[in-house]
Each structure stands twice: as structure tokens, then as C-alpha cells.
Length: 290
Image (cartoon, rainbow, N blue to C red; front, top):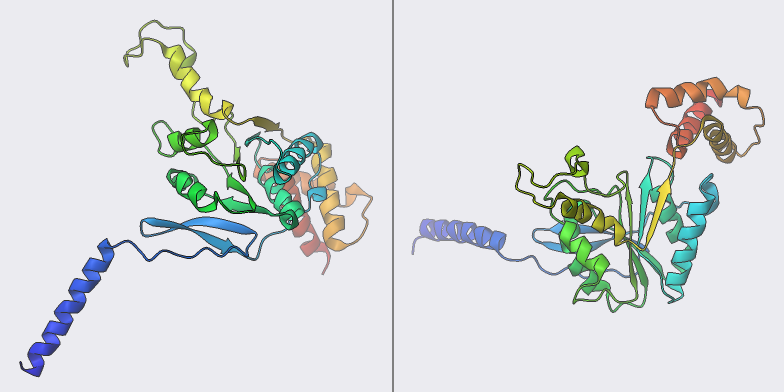
């Protein structure tokens, strides 16, 4: 065979192998159990736990004006890591009020006791059972965390989450809890027509009340359901003061130094929250500590 034909054969073989590899499942990825937190990611059709080493630490004492919510989550998490009965948790309410920060604060407080955090996107909830199988026999305690959870009509992942919360034929064991946050109270959009008392609807629903029950059934499967509320102006300003003092390492007692600017900052963003207060504190320090 001439050298030219051999080169063509090699080239053709390489193309065939590349096409074939696209259809083959990826090589399984070994999990690194040294990390304290993980992110569920996909490589082709296979998911894996991506370790996160540079974790944004949040001290539970830095979360203000949510004492009741902190106590409930802290007690539930403590029960969990001690091997006692604990509940899955749904946190709903105003954005920026500390829902996701509270989950991360639990990791910061209890990682030395074996607590681990797995963050999963809503779009990957179909993989929940795969995650459960990976960590079911591990000695650590895992919180599977889904931030900003909500579903549109017919969206995938709803039934998988419902099965996990309800306890399917495949048990989640005693080392797994699900913590979720949402701006929606019932996770699924509720329509005005859901509240109309009809016998027969145009879309064929003979018993519309059953559809309403289906919509709220997912949130009811969380054992603990906690609401977070918007802050009033004085609460917002007190949080601004806290963050300015913490970041600068000083003690600023006179709120008049930043009051008007902080109020304007919140008005422009349409929210008075802990997140907005922290962002303003960083901005104000940058502007005044030059």
C-alpha cells in the first residue's frame, strides 16, 4: 500500500473514532470526598459531583433580623448531623433576605461535624436519584441544596423531587436532606382560574379543585416551611451599619453619615434587603475610604 493511501486510511479512521466517541458514554469520574461542598455538573450524559474548595464562608452571626428562621434551620441541621430525625426544608419569601446565605452558614458552622453541601440546578433535578445513589453509603451528612426553585407548568424535575421528598421505593437513607429556596410560595404558578368555582372548564377539568391540590402538594412535602419577609427602612439601615463596621473594622454610630445615600441606593434597586445593604456598604466604603 502506498504511503498516500496509508495517510488517507489514518485520516478516515480518526474521523470514524471521533464520531464513535461522541456516542459512547464518558469515562466515569471518581468523586473527591475531601471537599466540603460540591456542584452537580454534567459531562455529556453523565453527571458528577464537582468539588468546590474555595467556599464563600458565611458566619451565622452575620445574618441579622431573621432570628426565628435561623433558630429553626440551625436546630434542624443540628438534629440531622447528630443522626436524629430531621426534615427537608423549604424557605420562601422576599429576595435577598438571607435564605441561601443561611444554608451556606450551616455548612460553615457544621462542616467539621461531617456536614457536606451539594448544590444542584433546577434543570438537573432529573438526576436526583443518581446523586442519592452516589452518596447513600457515605459516612458524611449531605444537604442537597437547590436555590431559587420554581416550576412552570409541565416542567421536568417536578416529579423526581416530589418522589424524593415523599419517599419512593428507593430510600434516601438517613444521611441526606433537601434544602430549597424559592420566591414562590407554592413553587408552581397559580392561575386566577384555579380559584374559580367551576364544575366544568373549557380545558376539560371536571374537578379544578384537584388541580389546585396538585399544585400545592409539592411544597407541602417539605417538613419545614419557613417564610422570609422584606425589611423595613430602619432594619435595612441597621444592617447597612453592621456591614460598614464589619468591613471597615470600625464603629460608626451616626447613621446620618450614610442614611440618605443608603435609602437612595435601595430605592434605585427596588428592594431593602440584607444583600442590598451589604452591596451598599461595600460601595460606601470604597467612596469614603480613599
